Length: 446
Figure 1 (cartoon, rainbow, N blue to C red):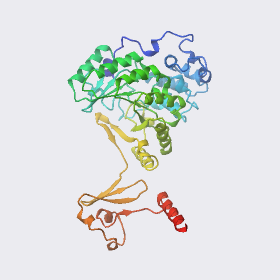
Figure 2 (figure 1 turned 90 degrees about the vertical axis):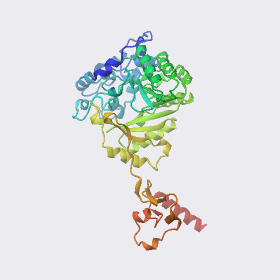
Figure 3 (figure 1 turned 60 degrees about the vertical axis):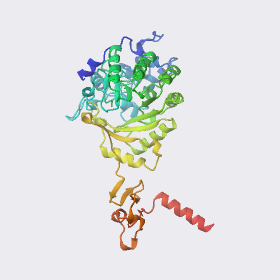
Figure 4 (figure 1 turned 120 degrees about the vertical axis):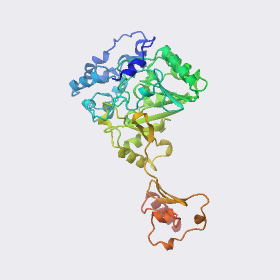
């Protein structure tokens, strides 16, 4: 655990949301006594505070919900290093208590988390080094990120902030919030503030509003974004009370974090719908995870499901070089392959940007298939998703205006396109070309 983040987040004067409500009839830890199938039948299942109070936080509670779970001793050792918390709702999405299940992999500790090659770091993005005041990360000139809390309803095993998330469940104090506001006032170049954590939506609504009101008091801040995974792991949190409060702080955006189609449930869709109906644009930031979603078909299904919920696929992240996540990392080539697959199969609206959040605080670097094949002063050769190559003429191109002579080159190639001697090389047998031929044949017979 990094010491810096413990120093910069202090206990709030208000306790975490799971402690603010009076205890109900069932005592905390009920999950340790009944299987998840019966647990789901609780009369308070749809109360987000109840979900927070009954998070699965111990191996005993996990075994009670999944009696046939293996490697419980390993789970305990890993959870002692990287805390575990799973909402009952999210646990109910586990279809099989095995690493073969994507939801299981994302929330249940695994022995592989203790395997750490030397190139992994606690803070690979060097957020602590870009923290001029406690709780505020200023990396890009026009943007800043506020770590409002270290608490999440569910602790993802692939978290980039494993060094702090859940180690202590703390919220930035009012005094530190004042320091953040003062810094924003002194740096009017910051136009966009992201409120993150932890998960800000695990806090009570009045505490969230305190953050938003403080940030909105700075005239130079134009956009406020909130990063939250609650629509995925705790959709009950998206209440009418919350959305009514959020409406008062537009322009406001919310980015959430769906990684697999199994997370797209009626409850999740309803939560996203409430936010969208409140006029809040929604984006999604997925992480490419080995054995979870590193399949072109799974990412396609995920992106289609997100758009149906009015959530724009925003980023597909390469897994960060964080200690405890090496087993989730995929080769960069896998992400490029997935992006190649998506182009032409789903609309541009449903295609995220594949990015690497570079070590040493280098920021997000987009990584894409190469669609620029060649170039000359007169033409740029572009490739489409089918493999078709086209010559795009540059402005004021005299050679292009004069036309081209294909007969001078018996074998057409990329050079012919770049020199303006041909306009396109079309691969045979593509679905689009075959469709055109069928339609032409039907038209001739008519």
